[in-house]
Structures are given as structure tokens and as C-alpha cells.
Image (tube, rainbow, N blue to C red):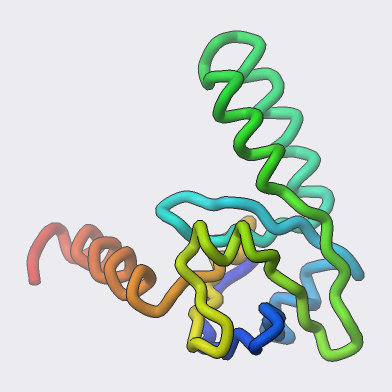
Length: 138
């Protein structure tokens, strides 16, 4: 399971060192794709294939649109982890997630996946989720 929150730095080439606890859950490759709420989702090959099968079924039955299916498939890329455990996040995904080269980013676990966030967006979604856990109380 992907759990915990880690602060990282995106280098000038768009490379990100994944936390070692997350690398242990991935093989030498993983998938990066557009995620919910403007994050970059990191999935193992097995989890991506499971999700792809589910999305294809949902598109066939009309539960999701073909356009959503295309957007998800088009945003996905299979990437290799280098010897330092880094992945390169392509420009399209960095733009989508508002990740700037050289900036601090948040790598957060979300059980079956990891998510890469701009610091600003992560603070918003984390505050919202914490509020829900507190029963809407501050």
C-alpha cells in the first residue's frame, strides 16, 4: 500500500526521486498519468492494467465517456525508474498538475497509487480531506 506524505524537489529536467518506500512497491517501470484534482498519478504496471480493464468495461457500458477513456489513455506513459529511483514527468503532465521544474512537490500515498502534487494544490486537498475526517469541524 502507498501511504504517507513526502516532500520532494522536481529537478530542472522534470525528474523526481520517488520515496524509497514507494519504489519498493513498483518494478523497474511504472505508469504516470493525469490524476484526479490535477495530480500526477503513479501506478504499478499491474494496477494500471487492472484500471485499464475496468475503464474499457465502463466505456463499453456507457458508465464513462469514450472521451474520458481517450484522455486517460493519451495522458499515460510507461516510465523507467533510473538508478537513483527517479522518474521523468513529461511536460504535458507537469503542465496539467501545475508542477514547475525546480519546485517543491508533494508525493503522497493514496493506497493503491501514489500521487504527485504541487505544494499549493496538495495543501487544499489535504485540508478538505482532514475536514471531512473531523466531521466537518475545524
